[in-house]
Length: 364
Image 1 (cartoon, helix red, strand yellow):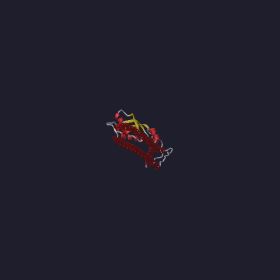
Image 2 (tube, rainbow, N blue to C red):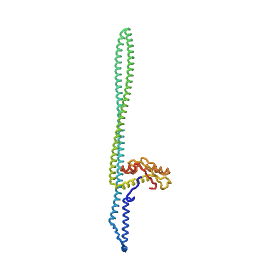
Image 3 (cartoon, rainbow, N blue to C red):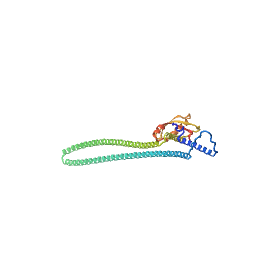
Image 4 (tube, rainbow, N blue to C red):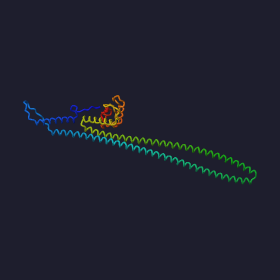
């Protein structure tokens, strides 16, 4: 914890001038009272020269001091308002990026679902076309078989008429021929049945190959969609990093201007003490007082912060022997995150990134 430094024997510059002004005012009042008294007898010896202080100059000095104090307070308020506005703008940008990412993810999911539905519809149409082709081929085969059967019936009728006109030898020959035709028909039916079975097996293999190809295409598409999503996420991360860097550069520029306008080491120390007091108020507001806690308790913690004020950890260094009080202080520090810290990164790194915070229970 940084110690308070000042000028003029431990007093800050405004306080020193205020004390000096009061001393001068007392001297003026004393001299004024003496003017109403009888003129004293001039003592012997060397005369004493007294310096006359102009009341108007004294009033002007006091006015300048008051104006400087008011200007400093107004600058602090303006700087705080500017920091709060910048923080709100950064949070708005973050929420807008999150909404855009959600919309992009929803659009990608809808596109993926639509493509999957289109692929299913195409596969269904392909199956329907194949079924129609198979039905047409079966119809053609049935027609061909019917024509062949009609031709065979006509030939058999002609042979039967010829056999009826011939003698018994011719009838025997016709019977033998009929037996031969029956055997040929049986052989043909067996051949057709074997051909149909082979066609069915070939169709099954073709269907399995088509299903495997469709599954591979779906997997390739899923991989492509995943790669596109990863690319979109990387682009979003790059945009976020660029936005964060721009915001950080702007904050650093503002801090540099504020630091350049500061009034030296005393002003820097006042800033540190102001942030420490603000952190004390934040933690005090979040502190849930244990029952029957005695007054005068205090606790020292080592607090690690990010530059945004987010609390990384809060470890007790010295906090007494009451575990309830210790737990309540640790919980208050974590609940008060993000803490109010300087935007000057150098000031933050030197005094607030890893610092000892003293919590006083009676401060509130």
